Image 1 (cartoon, rainbow, N blue to C red):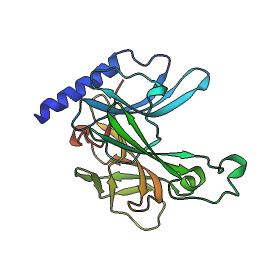
Image 2 (tube, rainbow, N blue to C red):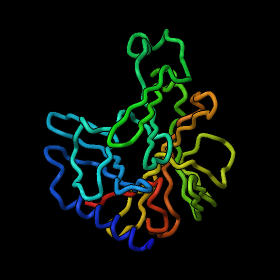
Image 3 (cartoon, rainbow, N blue to C red):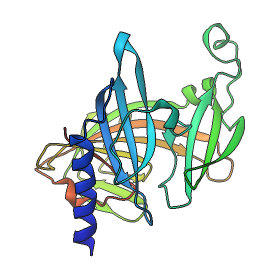
Length: 241
């Protein structure tokens, strides 16, 4: 059964790539993951259009549909906060709230949501936590890069072991890392061999919803590793053109 599901998923990706659905946009990055209990796929994309116009975001489509850039269909957030399921999707966005441009320096940072919005779309209940721009930006932890030797996956988390640092913000050696599944994107070649794994590790306190940190990680395997070693749930896999 697992093999059949994987075949259906890969077939859907082939339809996306060959369906001439990119329209007037040049899709720079395209990733997909399954949504458990449905025939839907969640896409993460980045695209450029005429006159240097740019768009990115998340879109939900049925696995039988061809991917097209449609800004009006973007989910209303910039960060995915949890693994989506058949009824519920949760994300994060920001608003200026008098903290952009000339107001940024003098604004008092707010690290908890300034509001929460609940939306019904495509039979999904979508919850969006909205943060003040300055508060969100000040908890940005930057970028870190590692090589890993081994990994372990559970239903909601990923561990990476025996790490070599390339860019690392702390002075102490880190031998392992654990990530909650949210925005984990595997870049791969046409043979499903992994080029790198990009993780946007946004950590928010479960009780207060305060932003704790927001760090982007790049992880590359020390030896050849196939993306089929990872599940299709809670992990985006690159669609190869």
